[in-house]
Length: 193
Image (cartoon, rainbow, N blue to C red; front, side, top):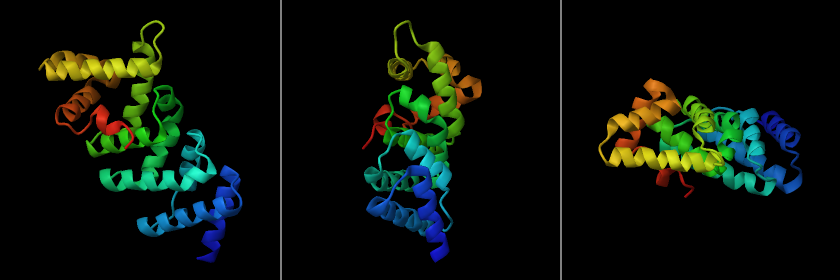
């Protein structure tokens, strides 16, 4: 309706500071996404995620299209995806993830049956503890994921579970290792397409 469109535009203007053609374009995309999903898009989590990842107005539409694609290909709801991105943005950025890579990871975790929000939260906290002196969070992530893959390839599930349990806890470790073993989650799938 006209009233809903006005609310969408006003909220986007307030939360992102967009005006003119950019505001109109993003507003139209949000309305279209609402029609596709059959319900109003959560503008708080959407604009929060876009702002957290520093997405500029002219890029917002393309990023929203990308997030919709992740939602469609993995089954995670659009609002759930933007919520995960918003709440985990600082930690994911410290790990070197772009918004697209973070979205891919959230979708893959959800598709593998893991709690994307909880898993990503645990990951960022654990990597701070697992980082070696002078190692950035991103370097620690790449090292730990590499080690995990090596253990799995070598058939050393006990070592893989031990390492994963330091990150995700015992229950989460079993699920994460199973998802990596089955090919549901890999570094290549996370990297932005």
